[in-house]
Image (cartoon, rainbow, N blue to C red; front, side):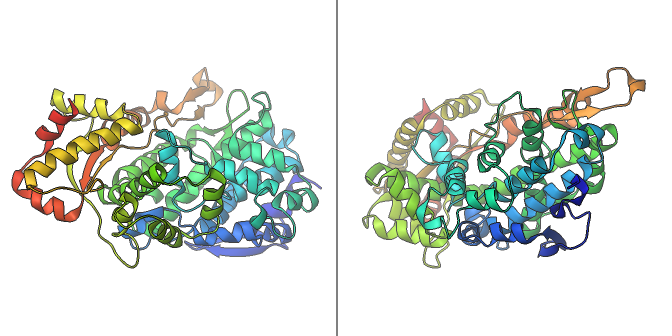
Length: 462
């Protein structure tokens, strides 16, 4: 079969469509439907794409199920464009194309309730599973209650005629670095302008009701796709430079104004705090916890956490504002960022940012005792949260830009050509990655008469 005859690419008629927001028809075939209809994939209907964000943006109730289908559709666009590039078309096989499409569809198969919050605890020293690792286990059929009549790995072998281990390695980026084709395929779903970001920036913007992630020229960007100098990753032709700039800037603004909006961070910090408190007192094994996570929706998992913990525990105290139709979010009483000019605030930020989980807990305990003296009453250990930003968004987002021969050296990094892209990473670290102190709403009201608490907090940081 020629590459242009692969039915999943949609060059020929005879495929069905799935309609997803906004006004998008995603092409699918019988073997695609076998993956989508698998119990492990259908489970994603219960997992919100943005965790607790719907408590701030009411429309953000969309699920990983919708996003995964969207990324599959975006990958079809990427491949349709890349097949116009001779170097890719001549090197790619049917197996390569299908392996990427399967990886795009299954890249989030391991997501579970509040995965990013749990993974944030992992980055802060807690032993929690990553959704990528869980996804690999699901594809291999290692999670018994999600194996189905045929595991996803068996469907990939029997119906797609591809190696499930290769699909896993493309998702995880664990392929041989010398494997140029797998490196290209991985870059389609994991790079500065990948199909994953193309879908979630638009989809999240639509459901959150904000414009930031959908203002770039998608068609221009796709039509400019090519390969880099080494022909092992996607790149863009010069005509796509501005579209790529706006794409990367759109991701920056989504984090600044939406994903890490201070009230969203409050809800996220409450979930992380509840999970951290749960870890500190419950002896549940990693496998047992994973079984619970993979059997619950976001809301039912919080109910499970709430009901499993003692009445006065930090977990239950925090979750009282999030379960059973309650919305009582903590309020911020102080903010620190690297952009502040006061030396003491800069020092406070760097000190907190470098702390491990136990050190942050000790700081929160000192701050709680100090605030207790201000309001003249004892405080619950979970009345205060020190929210530090995730540590996994610090790398520079860039991509190769390819010019014609008239320019001389015709390969450049986008950040070398664009002050916008070069400055985004600095701004992200300096401005967007804030540290916030949140407190229980009643306590926040009591503290209003005490003015700016930054001095007190800086004093306790030492």
